[in-house]
Image (cartoon, rainbow, N blue to C red):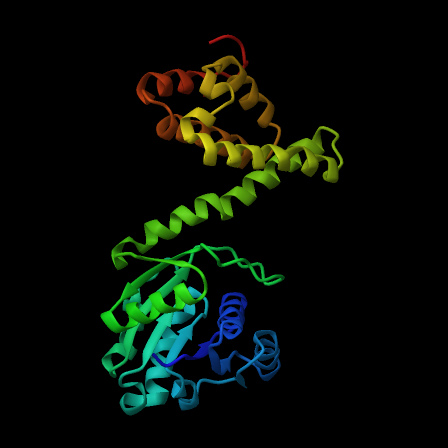
Amino acid sequence: MNRTVSIIGAGRVGRTLGKCLHDRGWRIGAVVTRSKATSRAAARAIGDGTPYQTITRDALGAGIILLTTPDDLLASTAAELARTAGREACRGKIILHASGALDCGVLRPLARVGAATGSLHPMQTFSGRNVPKLQGTTFAVEGDRRAAQAARSIARSLGGVPVDIAGRNKPAYHASAILVAGHTLALAEAATEVLMDVGFPRRRALETLLPLMKQVLANFERLGPRASWTGPVARGDYAVVARHMKALRRYPPEFEQSYATLARLSVRVLSENPGPKLRQLERALKNPRGGKT
């Protein structure tokens, strides 16, 4: 397989994948962003590649083209690339996008002009400030046969684990990532703000919560979900749940609503017999006084 990759949309994900591939012996072709300055910066960060500020036929000089634009630009980028390059340049090329929620259908304009299309999504977070470790990372793979084969090869080259997934399942797959990544940050920050409101300096709030979060994850990994479940909902201490709800009413409504929703979710996914526990929980969530229920 041709180990040359062009990257269109070299932001956080594109730069990271490009640098990791370059470090593992792949050659980087075109590096395309919206401006000359950002494309040059991306090529420097990757350590290889020719910067471009517009999509040209040169991007298709590589064996594999990675589209790492934001999701809402993928369809228009695919259409522009198909229109600019044409059937002759696209025929036989392998074109992959890196969206977690979209399947290869978004690349249909390129498939129509003869390209093999698919997607390759690393289940990892990209801050843009450092290069995350991809060793052992799951890469969701889907697409037509040639594109999926290339995606698996890239994932393995990066030390990742390719996992085939049906295109129709990608939104649910991606939602699972956001539950534990994006929403975890919101929960951590909300908890931090509550501690700051009751007198903790921010640094002490973080030093209080981070070890707790790490221990929860360590327990989850070692013992499994149910054996690791603690707190008043797990114990059936609904009077404490009611007091929590009362205390959270002085904060923006999302704090109280999130606590209630997550308590329900905890019972649903962690309790062996959720029905009775959910009924008791609902009474506690609606009890304004925080007394015995």
